[in-house]
Amino acid sequence: MTRDTIAVLGAGAWGAALANVAAQGRRRVALWAHDPGHAETLARDRENRRHLPGLPLAHAVAPTSDLASIADARVVLAVVPAQAMRDVARAARPYLADGAAFVICAKGIERDRRHFMSEVVAEELPQARPAVLSGPSFAADVCKGLPTAVTLAAADEALAQRLCEALSTKTFRLYRSTDIRGVEIGGAAKNVFAIAAGMAAGRRLGASAQAALIARSFAELTRLGRALGARSETLMGLSGLGDLVLTCGSAQSRNFAFGQALGQGAAVQDASGGKLTEGAFTARVLIEMARKEGVEMPIAEAVDAILSLRLSVDAAIEALLMRPLKAEI
Ligand SMILES: NC(=O)c1ccc[n+]([C@@H]2O[C@H](COP(=O)([O-])OP(=O)(O)OC[C@H]3O[C@@H](n4cnc5c(N)ncnc54)[C@H](O)[C@@H]3O)[C@@H](O)[C@H]2O)c1
Ligand SMILES: O=P(O)(O)OC[C@H](O)CO
Image 1 (tube, rainbow, N blue to C red):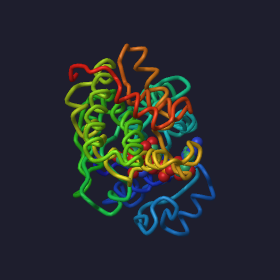
Image 2: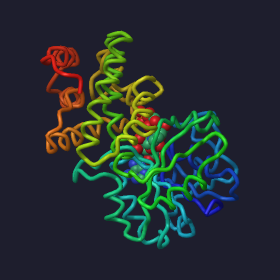
Image 3: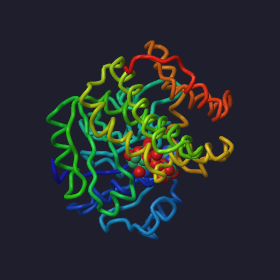
Image 4: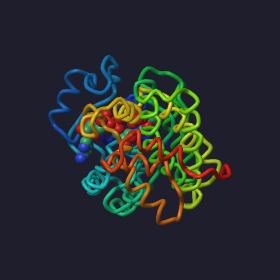
């Protein structure tokens, strides 16, 4: 499978970066954009100037807005925003080959139906073999060829191994897993916690508070993950702890930067600066899932309360600090 044809759905920062990865050693990688104008601009500029300025598309990457371009792909990388995954998967259904691997690269949970991305894909693409790719990885770092390691999970370990071989390069290293649910929970939840970490940075709470916030966020992730059947080693691995540490520790993260702007006083509707902040879509559904499982997630609850305008940043910090003292679990 290592030289199988690969297509990429979604031509934003991460789609362009993964298309460049897939282009190594391949003659053609279709990069599908839902907006024909965006596909034309990419084809003309050979660069995603909005999302990845200064980082050219590899020669083999072929931008297109024609979904039929995925028909010959044995591996399709789905790199659209989580809330768009159902529509894109449904539109891809007539074109996706039977048995093709459909690798979910979005990090989020469907808000309306409370479905994980793998559930969305199972419903919309019955002919696909779903997989999930997630872990600490900024698109710009990957495009620059900086060393990066992520997890790729598929229910069938042989498929996971073959996908790892197909997608790994010298600087982009994939570790296989069969814990799809564990990998997708980590990717979705870390975006919510990164908003909280950004707020703490924006309020200048100090490095000690940042570390405490990451550790307590990990405790919340672990509690929810276990309740939903995730494995401990997944939660402690690249797609769990690894991505949490990256995203909660860098203003390069859009979710962190969004939280930082909120912490500095920006209004919720202005704080993202027009950038995709998946955590803002995931916060509510994450806590709804947690409540259903009887799992306490005070940091995620605080993020949701702030985004829903029920609590100010300072009131949320105060409430978290005033929680009753308890055992460290
Ligand atoms: N950027 C990163 O470093 C990175 C890394 C790992 C994972 N991810 C994940 O990848 C996913 C995509 O993020 P991104 O960074 O590429 O975002 P982005 O904002 O750079 O690009 C998103 C792309 O999706 C397109 N899009 C928007 N609505 C759409 C729809 N309804 N149908 C089809 N396409 C649509 C946009 O036009 C845009 O090209 C997110 O879930 C994100 O969490 C991003
Ligand atoms: O910019 P963010 O916050 O969407 O994070 C990007 C990646 O998910 C980091 O692993």
